[in-house]
Length: 262
Image (cartoon, rainbow, N blue to C red; front, side, top):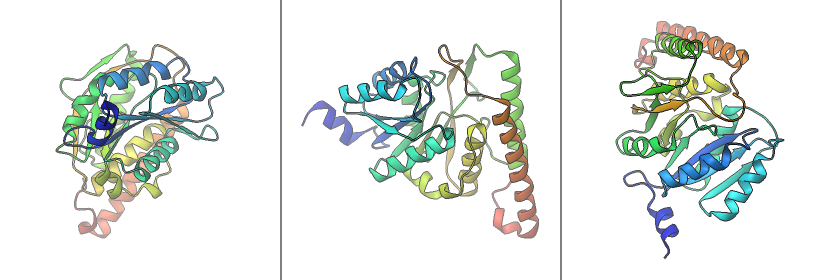
């Protein structure tokens, strides 16, 4: 049995086989860099590039990476359907193939693959690990003040509205063990962007999933265009408000039904 086969069988100690899902849309300048960094930082993990039919050729670049490395895979999707849909497809792909844990990671380099081993280590004693920008020891690099304030305010609002006990509910650098994905009602998820991450945090909390936060170094992308838009922010605000009101009404009707809120 070769070295690659050994790594694929053993996976990360205490966690098992791990799949890193990297959604892409027009990330031709970044996909090869991020995959190489993941493979160097955590050689035992597999990588799935979930490409939304990028017109800039990202999918073809990913195919080349997969052809040269059996631990890299590509999921070609028909078109741009949003971050949440890409991750849900990646989760399904992983579960069908028996992975023990799935990692969410952005393609633009803002999530440092070098932090991945620490997140996976934390997953030995938790079902969901959030790579947090706002917990003690974290660093955020090259963000303008407007983005810093928007993120801090959004996370504070989510925590107050939903009672989710984490400092970075919108963070997209995460590890989900299979038990967490089984506990979360993924079929009910409809949101995208920031709202997608908040929704999964809310559902995980309601399901009693063991969640922990690990500080990360978060850096603004150096290549390509940000996918952030006013529409994504508006969706998150609207959905968080709706969920918060719904949870409060449910708690008022049946206090025992939402004993974990707030």
